[in-house]
Image 1: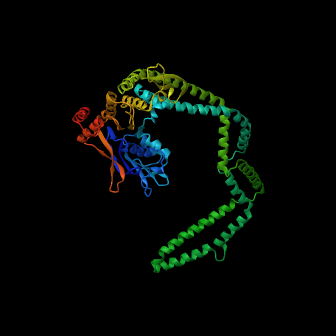
Image 2 (image 1 turned 90 degrees about the vertical axis):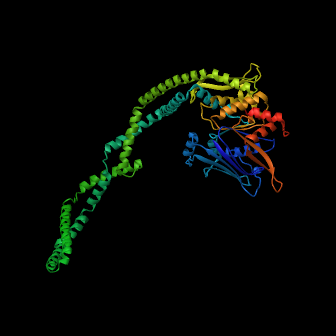
Image 3 (image 1 turned 120 degrees about the vertical axis):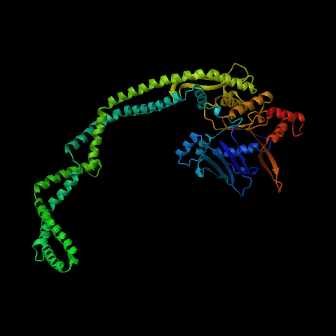
Length: 552
């Protein structure tokens, strides 16, 4: 719901804040007072393109802010989450326009582009202008209305889930079928590559281990010499390390008898001596494992050469990656060998889903058909009451040739405006005002069945008066019982039905500059305003009594 709109430096509005209430809000005022200017400002936060000509004072920015409560609007909250925007119950949409005509848009202080702004606000506000009533022309809107009345929501949801799965599997089947020939042409080459790898039979980390072993064999003499040198320094040298450590232990042991403070040092040195003995034993054992067999080195080098060629051939770096290549080739070969079986399985799944979709589409079509007659009758009843006495509204429901995400139906709203017996699409047969009245009738009928945003009607009652205007007001009040309605009107019969009444007027400041302002009327002010709408500025008792009667 729209809680308030703030307008600054826009056309002839210096600064204005308009709070709105739930239910049915009506805006009245003299022609030229600025009602359309307020609507134009609202259009900017709905994503309309900006023009620097709207700026009142070029030294300042033009700012339009709309404050919305989106607590019950799940679609809006999901859009915010999808675009990583803050989800706030009280959401603020702002447009700023500078003197050069450049504009910026914000949702909860985060900058957004006009595409996202339009997508988001289309779920918040439905703006009905006489010659811009797009929703009734949209075939998706027709489906939304008929399915809501037919109670198709759950069935349609299940159908659409299966439809998406059918589309996915069909695409997969097409790709698999299209690639079958190419896969078969590649099969021989992939089998050759796989056989080469299987013959090589590489093990985990094998090449890395063989490289270490080859280095050991190549430098066996040097390694043995170095180890013997260390052993010599540990035990056989004139100043061998182990002998020196034993001597140090003896000295510290004698010292500890007269000075216990060196006991800890003695114990640590004793541990080091034990560690040195272990090192010597390990080095002696390692000498036994050093092989200088040239034949063994040749065998290892040959396997390494083959392994490195395979690494280069497949563009990988180590044994693990080469094993992964082998596994992928095994998978690819198996896919090709079983591709006919996979295609057959997919064909069976696609056919099964197609049959299920066809059955559900027929059920959707039947239920839509059952909802049409009472819907047509109710729309015609309402538009006749609203002055379209010669009009006949019809819903044309036809089976579609191909299924889509809505089933196998084609729905078109049709109208015969003058009892001619010739029906055309609503957008071709109806004028702007008639479109708005048809929309009012349609949304009144479906108000409790579907989620609607704030509905704004701009002079929907133009060209009608008397009883027809009264019925427009009655329907808006009925619709306003469960949705927020904002209506700009010149008809007293409509204004009298509103829950809240706002009056737009012009005023002059100290510098004799004209600006638009607005105020909410209390009950007595409403009587006066409606009486003036009936009889002009010269109030008469008859006009006042008529206004009171209309409000009752």
